[in-house]
Image (cartoon, rainbow, N blue to C red; front, top):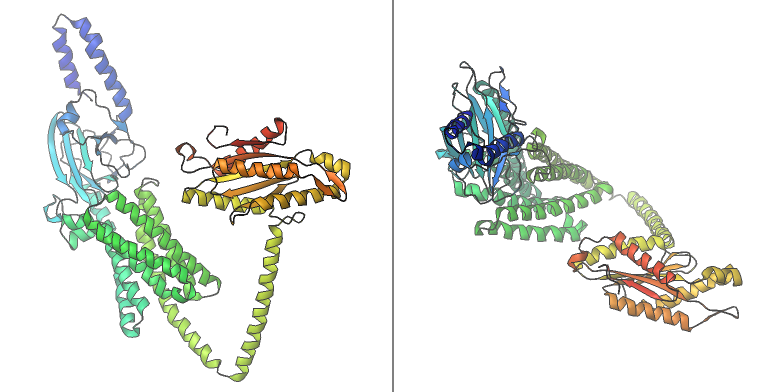
Length: 632
């Protein structure tokens, strides 16, 4: 707790009259003075001066905070708690993500000159549920306001889409401003202090920008509604509904809907989530219809429709009372994958030269980028500055304008297609088109065949005709991700031929090559399941990747391989070559809590280390490591 100067002097005078001055000085007064100096350093001790002739005051470095996890402290307890400490604020904007705690914010306003303008404090986050502001002079509360979006707009102290506080002019002494904030949404409290004149200028500019934004959106809605009634094509209707829902989402997000549309705290609690899920539904329907995905990309079309169904169910669950933070995360979990699917379909059509798809993809990329940046901002991963605060509106304007252009280009594209269809009625043109198409198809078929051959060659070892190191890198990465998602074990066996250099030196490299081929054939005879695979890792070293195989199963299979090679001396060109192998085994099991942080490099490194251990322990043996730092 920060004591006032009068309080400290009063305590000192009082205890000087008592007999236990020495005991008090060491036991009571010294800790208080020490703690006061420490907390003052933590909080920063800076005050905001109101007499600098400015219209806007910078609160950077002046705000400190305290997290009340119990949500039970009152202002007197905040003021009187002897061992209370304030934490310095990191960053320009208090941002704590989603939290059920109560956050207390504090900053000091220096004693102003009598002629200084009164100050206006603005909190630019209309989604905060409950805000209490206390202006304290000395130990007296001279200003007390309660507001938040849990209060109907008509009952707010100040009728503004953001939260405003007209701080009192109190020239006798400095003011300490305390804010108590509690909300279900992201706890972000962007504070800005103005003079009365400065706030008026700022507010006029802000309303001009917001009016321009919502005016553009409304114009696009009316324009495309007119096109729908003129052309009776579904993409225009879906676009209108998507724009209306996104328009509504932004209106709630900026606080204008509670101000102008519904003066209801109950609606304010659910509107953002409801309009967000509805936006996802109509965005998917619009993309599916505009790009004609059922015929051009049926897989993406089915995925978008499934996401739309889940979004519809989530919109119904909004009123059932799940956690606000959980529903926001669910919205992101649906919005981002659907946006990526839409973009992938758009890029595919863009690649084949569909001009409306190009404009559509640019528009969707703009919206997705703005949505992701805004989400990162809400979760506290990006600072709350002007471009992150307005990024969804900027991206929204660009998106609706580009989509309107894409819809217009779609009409032009259809006209071009009709003209082309009419021209194709000519027999000579049909013959040319048929011949050209045949040539192109033949060329594409040849190209596909060549690409398939080249692709197979690039992934196959030319000597043993099994998969090579490049194929191993691709395959094990895919299987590792699959094991992580599916929660099943993945085993890796690293195998090396013992004394292979001696075979080469004794019988020649040609015999060594035949030995490698025969060993590869034996290894493949044991890896018979569809997703089990043998690779030539390099030189005389092989790797075996076993799908859904725990450590005991991998050990059994490796031992069978070792015995098969050891018990069957290889005869090459009439010469008998005794060949043995050493093997190292590692297993990745995502269901093991200890192994949840293991990665692919750990899996390969452990198998390789066990192989070297088998070599060091005499060769012709198997060493295993279960990825849990316990030898098997």
